[in-house]
Length: 255
Image (cartoon, rainbow, N blue to C red):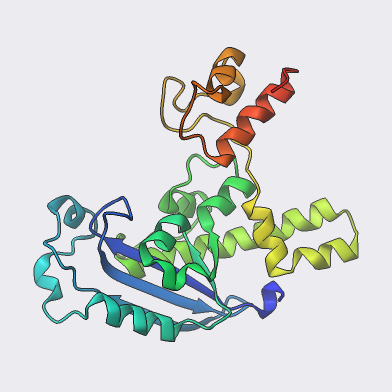
């Protein structure tokens, strides 16, 4: 299936907690675009939680317990969302791992595209990779309705996805160097997904630890050696490990 033949469904959720394993779904919005990124249909639903909403969560999205007196329960929302999604849909979300984990097994088999991950590959010089920051960095128009409602957040995700897909095509054209066969293959949806699944180059250390936010090139080699050792980082994901090993190779140190 090519990008032009695809059904893209943008997804955003509002929840009770930052960690999906502890979170309850409060609201879900979805927006279906065809392969030309024309809007086809929209879906928005509240979802009644089983416990009171923590005040810290309400402070983010401004949903409170009183909003849910007539809201459907989780099973009904899942049924409605499932009916909305084409069977071949590619689901698009910012920080897609969160939404995929939150929505659970019923939606895990779909292809998922993460706009944060797209941005980390295509615009590594962005000031940060939050959804709204990317939106304004890309030159999006002033946002006139409050964010942190699921459908409002999709205005931002949709703008960013359009921008990032255009940049992916520019990147593909530049790297294919006039090879028509390679360029055509880059328009295959699975080829694009495989590209964004690859590790991305980190120009700065992630937002934790003693080197929080520091340029990778400024961090001493012995810290990378420690991080890669058995006594080093215990939660080192594939992207960070790849970057640690990349830095060691660039410095001529075997790993």
